[in-house]
Image (cartoon, rainbow, N blue to C red; front, side, top):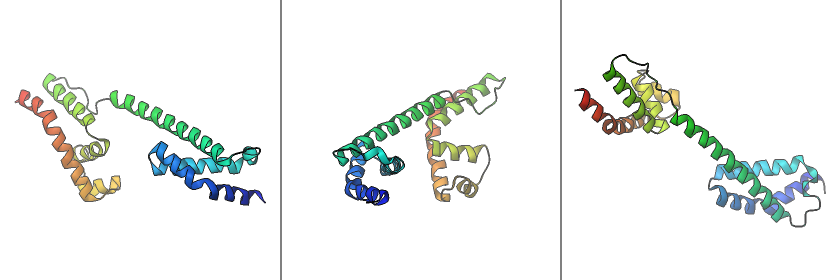
Length: 170
């Protein structure tokens, strides 16, 4: 049997079981498919990989598990880096010599970090770039109603965060 047919036979025998296993480990179909693609690409690139293997399925499941763990580690590391950056996000506002204005800018910057990224992007584009919801939708490749909803939800979250500052500055 030629190499291509051998690989196809291995895939046909084990793909369903490997995919189900990866789904249970990764809890995400896209990630499971990505690992499966990487796994079978690795096997296709390294003809010797299956030579001498007694139980194809066990071997493939072990390889799949190792690749899934690697993916989890990469994603966890990536998330930690994002968290560090989020914690150290600089204020988008220039410093102000007026202490009241600076307090407001600091509070506004802190409130922005409390918003989910999708809402934060829309709020920023609306308030500081003065974009219409149509322009925001085009820029972010989302429906116009979604842009408007994210803006409304973002403002709803802003109110309780900024009300104490507003009351103090009145």
